[in-house]
Length: 295
Image (cartoon, rainbow, N blue to C red; front, top):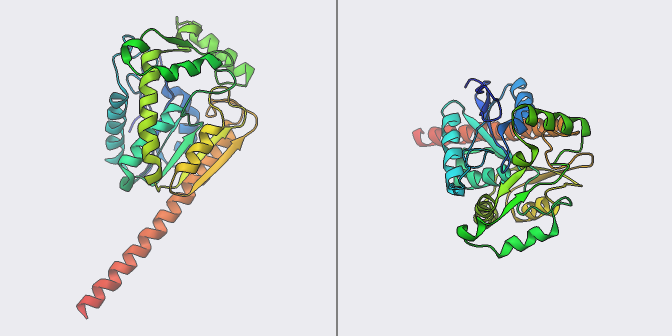
């Protein structure tokens, strides 16, 4: 799978070719695959094939009329999964923020085909310290026509604690003839569809037995740490939780991105080693059973 990128860069899937183990990563709500590029490159250097798909409707600027539903986002993600699965023997899935929730849904639906799940700052409800308390009134919205009356503007620091990186991102946005307000805003319809996805996924978590890594910042400006702990409590399988102390919501880009990459690699190596050992045990048991029948 070759790396893909268009002329502007931000409306592109990000892919790196590697070995027969694949990692599928999903960006945040209104974000882009570039949020995951640093981690994707690190995984690629370790020999993994990595794909961060651009999901129409979930990606900023791809649904200006707010027509997509969360099922459309998932359908594109499942298509990307099937493409990666055609190239790889083993796959881990993960994502950032809302992307982590989509990845959990995929893992629940395709559990037998996935080795593990990686959740970066998973979000069940945007309730970090930079989110206005008035946002909670949106819990009363249940219809798409009413949700169209709303548009939410994200506030600084936009998930980035590193001031130099935040300034660089803002300058890049302006250089691409976009505005910061445009990029860091979400339509009410998009947020409503996300809440519907969350309700679906929360009903699935008790049946998800795959090993899962959760990495969440203690002082998340967009998603309170309770989001991660809530997911941890509901999952049925083994869960490793890493709490970061020097970054905000976009952990894959912020100050502790090296820690995020290192812990992700450690988790992936352990999961794959355990999976390989289980396969060898199964092969020995099958061989023993076959010899017993022949005898």
